[in-house]
Image (cartoon, rainbow, N blue to C red; front, side, top):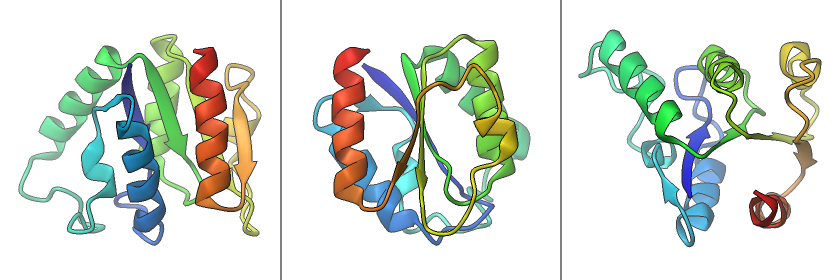
Length: 138
């Protein structure tokens, strides 16, 4: 299965360790098209050696190629919101993970009827269990 993993880059990299762990978990059985999200060297400037239009078009191509979109949405990110809207437009299955650490998931995500698989979690292990269970259903 080809997975498009969405998470914050320019919106903040505080959770890069979580992204890395989740991507590594997913890579055991699947292809993660956006593996770079878990790269510690990727800063909030993003891939600043690349033009924004190149990044956008590449990511849209990856979204189109993907079988499912998994979004870690704890850290608010305009890019992740855009990717989720595009996933809806492309009719891709979506799993949204949100760590219940005092932040609220955007109403634009939580209030969209298309996103039926929104899961709160506390630990990476808990998120991995959610993903394992949900990916078996897909």
